[in-house]
Length: 89
Length: 413
Image 1 (tube, rainbow over the protein chains, first blue to last red):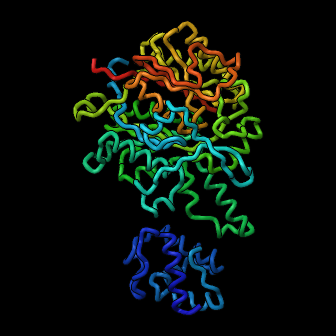
Image 2 (image 1 turned 90 degrees about the vertical axis):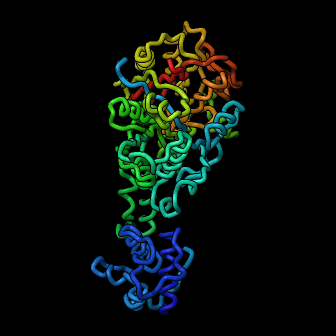
Image 3 (image 1 turned 120 degrees about the horizontal axis):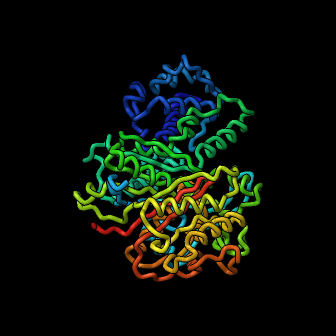
């Protein structure tokens, strides 16, 4: 999965978790929680969806790596390599 | 007891399988419209259930809906509707003086089954077990979701009382007002039970799950061919206030709670006991200072199980057999058994009698079971009674809990 696909994957997960939010204009270098209403339970939902959709395990110590979309791309890039984008799940 | 403040109902918020407002619900009860429909649930397959179709997004954000439970969503709907009906804007009130008391038959089964089903897809790898499980299954979930949704900071909790719970939420709310714990009480009950296969499977195992080729005929209390319970979802929360508070703000008053009783059979896990039900009815009448012949409508609990209806009829005959004025009806015949919501929904369906003078019927009585003969059973068609002054609402539940509530047509006196 390339950068654009990883961002799409995260956006799609957030869209499911926070359906009242507009995720189309998210800045990639700003903390997600500073742009939309996401609490710790939502964050755990993101981790769970990555596990369910892509089989990607994110250990608790690494949660901080997912703070921004850029961070997601950097951290998930190697883990998502070869995976197929799943949107609208 | 006379020193206790008088408690009145000033708002009704409900969702029932045949109506999402008191007006719609009442209209359908008088018109004989059933809310029971075909229902499919995993492992059980095709069965029947009363299902609600309220617009959850009227009072909830989509995110809240996703995060919470069905019982929470039903509770939030009912709370929003009852407060709006009562003309109470939470934002203008001391939110710490509002209490939420929600009766539930059970809670947590739906989410637990969902989670087990989910992790089964992953060979029971518990890293797939949701962090939402605990907040969704704690016993105060529906009441807590209501408090969260409306920013109510007073006491908010659930009362587990099997199928008597709807009455218990109402009684407890009234008591908290009388104790001065709160200034507004939201009390009643909710049920999400149609979303757990376990309740259907358990009733079926017990030989107590209704079946009928015509869903609208499946819930048939007192009829010879009754064969069990139709499980339904629903909710009804009342706004309760002390009379002087309600009058001060010029609130519309649906009725006054003048008596109640809660007792226990202490005899069996599931089988009811007419003797204790009798004591419960008489206890509520005594508390209200009324004789049986002063009750106009007995809203019966009967669920259409062979033995349960018989026991209740025995108790009603013993208490009201000499009362020419008293009429008996049943709401489950229309909407099935809404479990934790039953007590409050069934009372709500009868409250308009104070204004319109009619008793709704118990439908589907094609052949009255002789063991269920009670005086003035309002069968199949509603009956005009003229003036209705008192309603006795009965709700009983497993483990032998009995409850009775007496509501009086409001007069300032």
